[in-house]
Amino acid sequence: MNRKFDCVSIGSATVDIILKSKEFKIIKNKDFETGTAICEMYGSKVNVDNLYVGSGGGATNSSCSLSNLGLKTSCISVIGDDVFSDLVVDDLVKFGVNYDNLIIEKGEKTAISTILTAKDGGRTVLIYRGPCSDISLKSINNKNLNTKWVYLTNLGGGSKNVHEVISFLKQKNIKIFWNPGLNELEEINTKFLKNVDILNLNMEEAGKLSGLEMIDPKGILKFFVSKVSAKVSLITMGEKGAFYIAEKKVIHVSSLKTKVGSTLGAGDAFGSGFLYGIVKTLGIEKSLEYAVKNSVSVIQKTGAKEGFLKKLDAFPTPTIRKISN
Image (cartoon, rainbow, N blue to C red; front, side, top):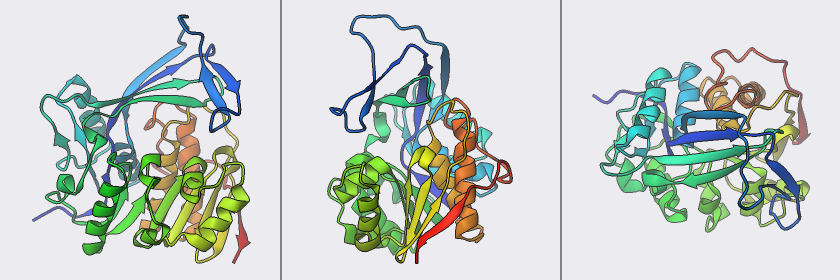
């Protein structure tokens, strides 16, 4: 008989190599979509102050975080059979995540993300996507999906994979928490999002879906209230907090001031903290509180998994206020 889970995470599994340096230059320029870039002089050598190597990727991050909080989790992703694959498996074991659903591709190299982290904690990620770059319906339809929830992250194959996987999960009456990649939002019809129980985006992704500039948060919020059919939408804004949107209700939760070690994994920590509250039926405000606390704990550390909380009563309570009903 298949083991039953509270949540199965599906998506990327990577090895993160984090390089931190005070010498990384932060450049403000309107030519970049976010208005900011990390730049270095061509042909130069730059000193690195700190080096970290550990596992990452949305599927391993979310499954480890949720397991760390006490839920029964499993992870569906694809790794290679190289030395880096051991880092991924070791972290799943460390956090008590079931890895029977993990796919190992012989002769392949595990995905690697090299993260350049500036002195303010901001980052640029260089990605070798590896075998987890195309997780399709074929990858999951023979896996153990005896679960209440799926935490769906970037599948790597664009909107086609997303449509097929989400439709398949809904046929099985599995609830879906979706944290998509930018590439997956290219051809997503907002009406299709009715199949998603919780949609979790950062401002760049929200701008991509809405077709609006990131500098127009009010316009983006109006778009989500009127056009997006997901049952719940979460839009994270870093130090400016996050918005919860459902049935024309908009709630804002503040962030908490803290020293930033690295922003890597903050989105997965926020999403898994929120989903934990939902699975435990703790209510919207408590779920938002847990989301903020888990993400703040993570950004204080270097590495996506280093700051995951076991108990969510740490830190002050963030400010939560209703914007509209």
